[in-house]
Amino acid sequence: MKKRTRWLLGGMAFGAGAISAALAYRKRNKLQVEKKTGDVWARPGMPVTFRAELMPGRDRSQRTFMVKELLTNGRVLLHSADGEHVEREFEPVQFDRPVG
Image 1 (cartoon, rainbow, N blue to C red):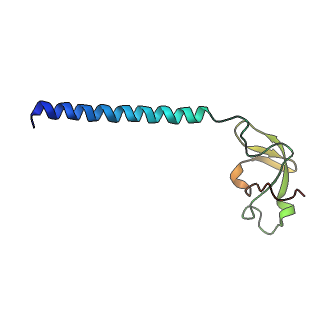
Image 2: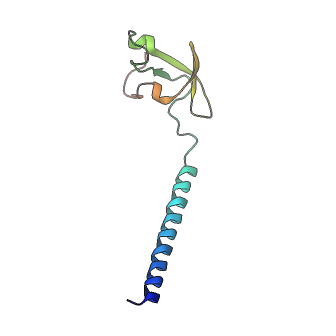
Image 3: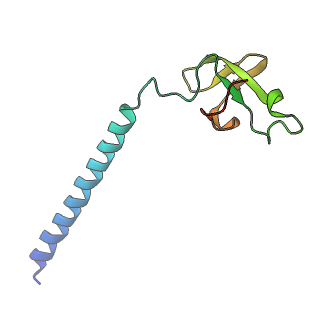
C-alpha cells in the first residue's frame, strides 16, 4: 500500500470517529434538555419513608413524614423534620401501598 493511500485511509478513519463522537455528544445533550419538569419523585403532601438504615430502631410509622415543599434542585423539605433531603434517603415509592 502506498504512503498516500495510508494517509487517506487514516484521515477518513479519524474523520469518521470525530463525526460519530460529535453526534453522540449532541444526542446526549438533547436527552438532557428533553427532561420534563413535571417528572419528579415527590410532591407536596405525599408521605415518604426514610430507609431503615438511616433511622435504626424505629418502625415505619416513626420514619414516615409528609413532604412540605419540593425544591428546584430535587430535594424536599419535610413537616416535622429539619433540613433538606434527597431521594436516596427514602425507601422507593410504592403506589399500591395504602396511605396511613
